[in-house]
Image (cartoon, rainbow, N blue to C red; front, side, top):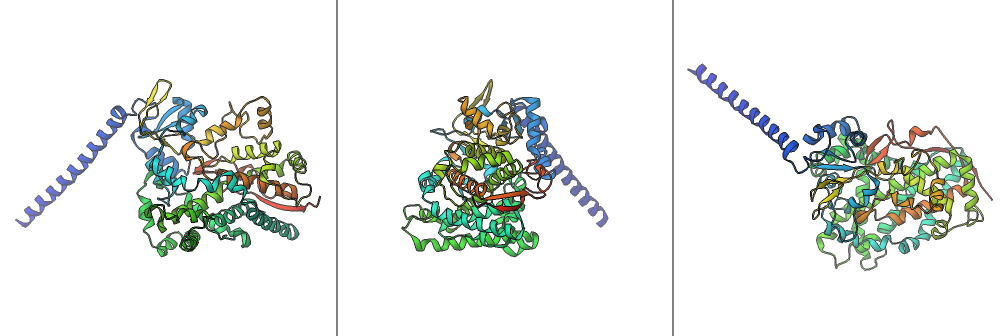
Length: 510
């Protein structure tokens, strides 16, 4: 009898599992049929495997390591300028449609929830989904990043820049190898931290420019695709205690230390209430709702401002330095032009004067183009309107993106797109062409990078000082060290990490 009961129990158990498996299979089949034939995006061309599941995206971005962008490029070659690259997301490859996706003016633009969920600072501007809330948060900081406000930072920036120049002079005397991208990143970190909360991180004073923080950030960024495809992971990870983080991923200690520094700086800011001299003075204004000036939100915004300010400007300066010190004729042409506003290698020149120099302007535009900025798809949703591309109607609320990488390497706009050719900008200006409309390193529209003016000021000032003052030789650095071959938010080489190493051979005196 006991044996009979046991057999019946096993049969019931087996039957239950069969039912569960069958139900699961039925759900998958029905969901697949819906996505292929009944979904609002079913009329958009693209591979069926991408329309059915995000597994295709997962394979190329997570398992292969940041390679889905180039699969998307293949889709465009086969299906045309508009493709469905996941069950609920579209990608468009047409530089002339960019401003329709990344709109400005009165048109509402929201961030795709999946993309917003990938960031480890959920209450920051970059992770804000709602159009009105983003505009409110951005409005608090707009004045701090106006051109006039950035020009007023010149004395502080000069102090940091001179500190970097002295480090380079010391390296020249010692014959040491310098990793330029680390040095530039440290400069940017010291400038933005000073402006954010009134005290500098002083990375320029540390050995190797405190590159442990940058290495850690790059390691964390490598997980960006997992966080995007599984957005619920980020809230879980934020609850993990510090000891567990350092046990699982020892290199994250540098990031956790940076978080602690930001938190400590935020906690000191209320003592400055009413002064409005720094970014965080403004964020703590008593007219702002309490939820918008909580410690948690200020820490998120602080990390965003710092990390965004550290990496992209450093890469652009590194790209410019690499190509100039690799091509002597370009270097001498720029140096000759700089002498018109910098009589000696130590002469200070204002940003407003430097941006009037045609060749310097062309070099910086070309460096921005080839450093790209963020190359991820960064889709936007237009919640109140349909987008129309040719005969295709895209329903309201659909996440639609366009990678900067495809615009900056479009041979119809930039012939020989992978070559560094500053002259293309000068010739375009002579022909009356506005080539800069296709330079979208800082994005466009309502969510364009708020730090654009600070970035430009750093680019012009730092590059001018460097070229006017030093001769350098590239050290074990070639195209493979800077060429984009993978996408982790920013572009990375196919093998290894972005880096530019040099040996400083001479400090110029005239």
